[in-house]
Length: 126
Image 1 (cartoon, rainbow, N blue to C red):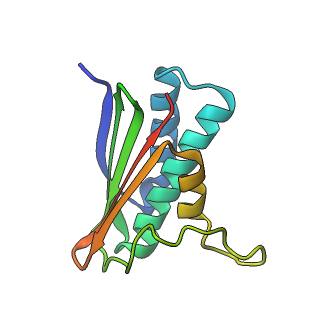
Image 2 (cartoon, rainbow, N blue to C red):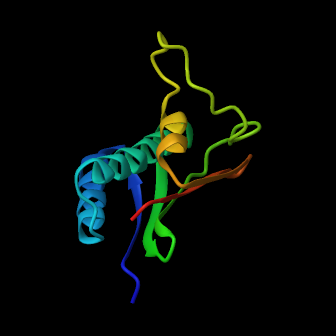
């Protein structure tokens, strides 16, 4: 059976979610920088779902032949042209680094977004 985590989350769940993601990554053999990048990327996606997607989201993590796969979905208003402009934010910007960071540490990034919500799927080495 493929190891996986599937769960809903809200802002109150973020600390526990981060711990679960770290345990999952460790169980899949991640250590050091690779583990940090994985946990930080998933945390960014979860935080974005809460901040921009109506205050809640759904996480699905699994280990596959291509690495660790993470999908975060929400039921927010969506956003236009997802994934097209993932340029670095201005160095003085206070936000806007989440998807840019994920794009730079993930093997692949796929975003779908419309008025019914957003789904972000990333594959990370693992």
